[in-house]
Length: 266
Ligand code: IPD
Ligand code: CA
Ligand code: CA
Figure 1: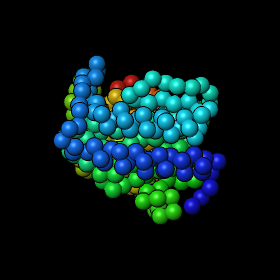
Figure 2 (figure 1 turned 30 degrees about the vertical axis):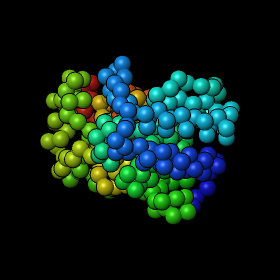
Figure 3 (figure 1 turned 90 degrees about the horizontal axis):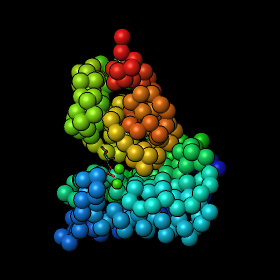
């Protein structure tokens, strides 16, 4: 395993992910799972809230000086180091018993995503990266395989994953997105975090989402970039702050941006 300045943080994120996996798996498909609708009309379950609570209490014990930003609870702390948490990415899958959901844990240092762990226990998969030490998948830090993006260089040969057509339609971007789907070899909506980690492991070549928040993206950025890929918004802004995601193996990025970003149109 390659070393980085964030090795201790990465070890901690794995320990936390192990604990959260036990909690979320105990609530997955539970007959008494309580599901509510949030003000933004999206669902949240008792598992989302307890998972975030568990991550926050571990961080406040082990990293008391760090700030925390999570999807379901208010921000805490100040300073350059901020943990960013999506306790369950793919809640709509979780509440229907579909195994494509994950806990996303990221660390930002002065705003830069330097560590990401994506743990998907119902798929039996975990992906992680820290700045300068590569992107990996496996059961644990000591039993891992390095991730590399694909070498596909032409859109006509590319596999594209996304979440839904309705997201693009609601934002008036469906035509642009459909144009991209027509220019690639294959599309499949693996959905949520899965689309993007599949780019990191080279199983797909491109993924995109028209609207995402910081907590949806922060953990994915180091995993994609350390695997050799590129992570921007659909307007080409690098990193997790552009409100949307275009993820690629690097080679296909400019060609996909050209199709998705209306400002780049002739
Ligand atoms: C959702 C996922 C999904 C995206 C939605 C998000 P959640 O997160 O990230 O891919 O299309 O906009 O809300 O609510 O399941 O954590
Ligand atoms: Ca999410
Ligand atoms: Ca979530």
